[in-house]
Image 1: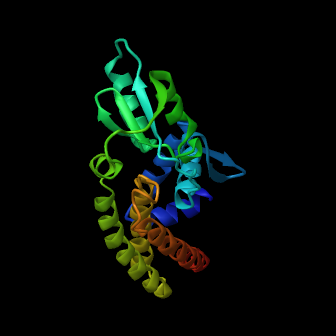
Image 2: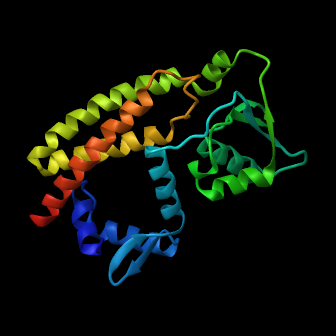
Length: 231
């Protein structure tokens, strides 16, 4: 998108032109944007995050055989920033900490679920194991991933998303701004989906929220195109 268009768009949210242009410049400096013939495109980490986001919106999981994947932190001293980086990486990789130094999840998640940078951090600090819990896995999954809490929030967001989708026909500035922020909140929640196997989370709220988002996405794209054409 051209800078002038981005300035117009950010103005919807009360962001001044100067602030927008400074942010664009900084993102270019960080390698998160590139300018090609005057058009800004995502690059670097930002592009990698978009790929992971796209996967989260239409995930393809491996069949689950009941086994769990364990990341066991290698023995040895680690700097505070390394420990913090690992915790952040494991959160993005949808792993939970079973106890200090042991991260785990059901082994149904392919590496395509997150940018390679997060896997690289985990691979550098952990040894990977496959195991089957001796205890009942349902309470274990509830304790580590709280799927009911995620599902409850998904229901609230789905109702809000359907409301803004229905309102997009008016294409007013306030409506489009509200729809954009709601859509962003929904995407963030979808990316936080632990993506447990159906055997451990049979509610179906995950699929329902994604279906509602696809409907919203199509309506929002039409409204945004009309908004830009009117400028």
